[in-house]
Picture 1 (tube, rainbow, N blue to C red):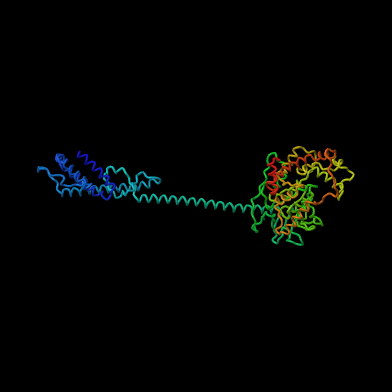
Picture 2 (tube, one colour):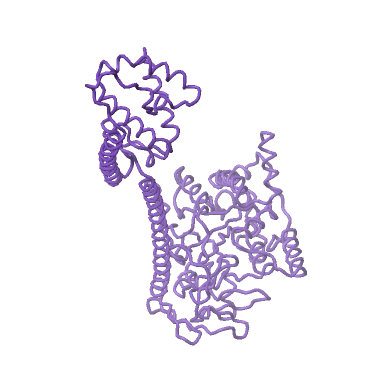
Length: 579
């Protein structure tokens, strides 16, 4: 029992040792001395005095909690026999210091081995450690049991700091790598942009070379296409506006000019013709309606006779002050000019070409009308033939003004029989005219598809629908204000910034829409529905009527992109009501 009590006391003292590191060295010294003393006493003596020691130990426990661990010679009485050697204080003192020196040396050696192992392990494993870490001042605690401590590896404060430094270094290196990747990406984008700009300028130069445009250095341009003509243009002279050595852009479209610092656009792409749509190939240089506008594009107005075309041309030329390319520019002998120039005719500007005839179109193409940029709008009734003016870098953007085919046919009859220039004998009745004596058979469908002869088939109508859907902004003579609004938006036109001039332009447009231009000299009425004349006219214009109905649907579809706010609201309301 005394032995068990002593064991319990030692266990509690051990806990006190761990909780109070400053007492560890004294406790170690006392325990070690007692162990040495006990080993020198005979077994019988220890057995005889065990109870006495236990009793005294219990008696003094209230005075000192650590008495069970501190050696007192008075607790061990000397035996009566003199045969037993009793160790003196000097023996204890000598034995203590000898054993303590051995324990200290051994602990120091093991601690060095542990520290080196921890240092090597921190370098062997960058992402973890295979030894435990004790932050409770383990460097100041003695090793009470070296045999047990040999399998435990402690990590010093220096090792922890090194690990934190390595983690910081890795984070810094990762951040530097990220910055390097961002810098490399920026340099790559910059190099691509430089290459792109250089490629655009190269393509422009090649295109000018192909069209024979060579800057003479004195503000003029020589334009010699196939050796047929030479174009030497000066600057403004007696009301004649000329190119002056650079491509002029449309309003709102910018300039394609390296010296002026204008915007640079992406190189144009050849239109991809789908299988089964080979009929679109002759019109590939007319821009699709959905493709973005380019500053080098040329506005084209497809003029359908007796459909309000002359009114639209007057709005563009007289009201908005734009330059037209039509038949007017060749008046007063300008059809023989060897160079392109803009001439003033009755207060409006025209390019000196005739785009209303096939021969005139060939001359305009030879002089480089489209690349010159002199005209704001090119007008012609020859849709297929006008394609010779355009190329990949100068495409046409087309607009058409439509009129009910039967109404247009009747208007054409009275224009030819009772107009300023009589083309058909006035004695020819409307019914005779509709039977084939001068009437135009499906004029719009034929001029769109190029089928000028022979009987039209259903596939011709489908081709005309595809062409007008892809290539044309639609307008209607009976919806004049909305049509003019869309035309100005599509062509990039705007009113003058001066308020007075703006009001004059608006009044000019309203008057022309109300009164019209080149209207018939006599009033007339449409043939009654069900009459022979009405039936014949309907039969002669059957494909144009179907195309006209299809264009009505396109007009509503184009409202979202080009329509006015009022028309958008109206269309939204109609859809809501189910109309």
